[in-house]
Length: 262
Image (cartoon, rainbow, N blue to C red; front, side, top):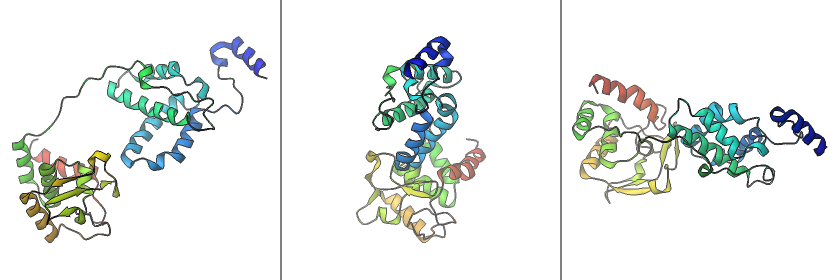
């Protein structure tokens, strides 16, 4: 049978390269297994990015390609196709998603024989221009905080005085604020109304609680803006869940910045 297939493939050249035994696995098979075994262990935001890469780029272009064909040359062709109109950083992120899944597959018994691990270093990628940093000056930050009201004001103060990520601030629980020892414990991160772990192990840390911030947080806990909730978070919405960072930006911060001409 194998010799017959080889003869057909040779005779029909490129198109016949897809004439393969029925049990040949494709990238779609690997992705299905990856979603079952690996995806549940990923952080929500990272998983959302991965699924975006899969649905928009990887599956449409490579989903039906047999694993035995997914070598460095095939992936380089994929890079060539997705590069126009995209930044070097975006292309790298998409390719990293693909190569990571192929690496996982190469370790699984059912796929090990045909899955080839392709490394990013094996590929030629478009250059990445370093993005210019965008930030507010100290004066602008004070202006925004002064113009803000309610829970947004308290959140902005925490961000400004601690340097925490927004998802870490939204994941702060009352028990994480140690007023007696003047420290904030970063242990959780909130995303889409759910508590998870911070972005990285290095993000799990204890940071100083300044007198000014302690005063603001005590005031918040005594105000109507604080809502007791099952998760014990400092900043709970009307559904008693952590706020969504995207909704805060869209419905509170961006309108405020627009009103200030910023």
